[in-house]
Amino acid sequence: MIVLDKVDKIFPGTTVPAVKQVSFQVDEGNICVFVGPSGCGKTTILRIINRLIEPTSGDIYIKGKKVSDKEVNPDHLRREIGYVIQQIGLLPHRTVEQNVALVPRLLKWPEERIKPRVKELLDMVGLDSNEVIHKYPFQLSGGMMQRVGVARALAADPPIMLMDEPFGAVDPIVRGRLQDEFLRLQKEMKKTICFVTHDINEAIKMGDHIVIMNKGELVQHGTPMEILTEPANDFVKDLIGVDREIKLLDLTRSSEIVDRNKEVLGETREKDCFISALDPVQRALETMMKNDSDIVVVRDGEKEIGTICWGDIKKLINKLSGEA
Image (cartoon, rainbow, N blue to C red; front, side, top):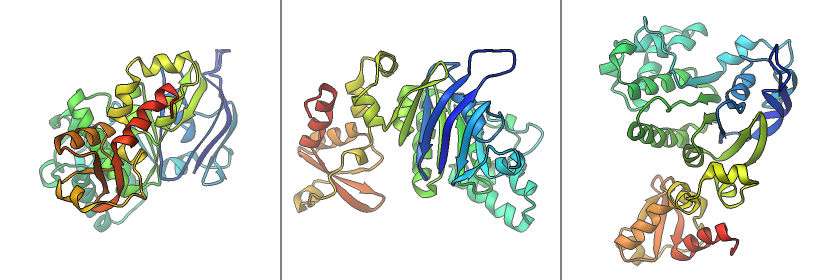
């Protein structure tokens, strides 16, 4: 869906590239998370994708189309890409309804289409549309404003979303809830998302794919499992931290290790040993212990997609030491 090919960015008045020879691909329907220290080039890459910043060299492709060509209208491109930032960016003099409806009105949607779309989106992100639709941003909590920001980015139903530290301005408890809510929404929406964070825990939890940056260069990219179990160098190890085992259990989604071929036995169902595919592996372990069982059933919505047993968790842990 999105491809960056040898992208460089050197800002005027500097000689050191902010982004240097960065190449990667974001598959359709995936969340790709960019993580690294401040100034490593994460946000610059995000802004290059929607051409808020023009690359010095290199090419960007979306759905196979080269969008870095000068003849491509950047304004038209940006209207097809949702954008959420940490500061939220809601217009303070406009109501929630007017903020969410901004892009559809720019696209000249009819009003009879806009109003139900706004209500649908506010309800989708967990807000009571009847309660907040006429409020102004200053009347909302930080978490509510973040939700409105996400709703606004989704308003025109863009296939691509760019999210720059979208949950960074709220406290940890609200942040965790917003992360969970967004992952739930993503299962339904299946957007292609580029997500910037400085928090490796958030990257592992949110990402289908992780791109680790340092000093403008791509250091390593891969699935959360690959990053945790096969860090490329000491920089990546330091970024992950010394608690890799805890992160592996607490942030790896159960869907990553589910055995989709094993038959679900009747006694497992009777013990109520069920978890969600989005639940962390730690939840699978806790459910086993609570129900005195060595196996849990994994569900995607109402559908049973397979099982996780103690042996599957042991194999996961052994990956850290190269035993499996």
